[in-house]
Length: 260
Ligand code: SF4
Image (cartoon, rainbow, N blue to C red; front, side, top):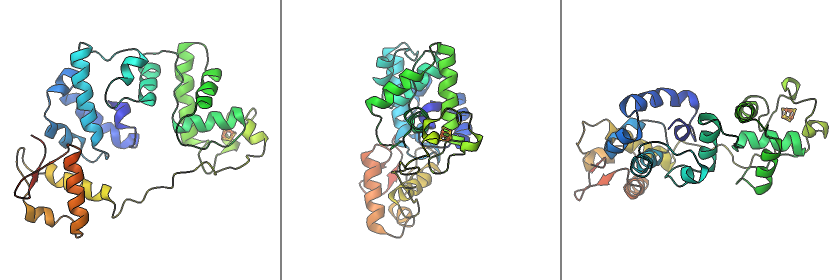
């Protein structure tokens, strides 16, 4: 659950939500029983709320296919809703102590720079990223898990995308990228920081926040919905996309409610 919540949300924001979820639904069977409205409400302002639906679908499958226990193989994990390569690898390494390379953006950047001597270009994970991560991963499972965590942390705090603090880096003495004069530094930042104000994400968040605040089972009327955002066309398309995603249900009379 924690890995899914932290996929696109800062860890400091995730912690209180994760604690609440674990109190409410301590295992997959409990989460599988929760209503869709309950999980959307509990997701709060974590963002990208479709993840909440995937978690519930995942819980149903863990309960039904795996006797309420998360599986311990890569193939079984990635067969579950909402679990991709990164999440499966992180669970195998961090939770189960298996020797598995974990590849997130930060780890790929550190490894590509330090061992291949070139700037990391982001995008989808390539076979050569995987080969490099496997080649440099310590042989012992315990050391491999520490390595994954340390490399991830190094990428987040020291070997950052735009301004790596090479003077503070424990790899400075062996880093091929630093030795080469850091060629093309920063050119790997292919994804500009997304603005939020005025986006559909903001409007969808406003709609969901208004619905979450209602007493359980109640609806928001059309007039109240119209007050949420001045651009009626954008508001309408966001309502439709939330309905399509299964996050809300639009009523025939124009109101909306969380799925029942
Ligand atoms: S020396 Fe600089 S470029 Fe190399 S891994 Fe450390 S922070 Fe990154």
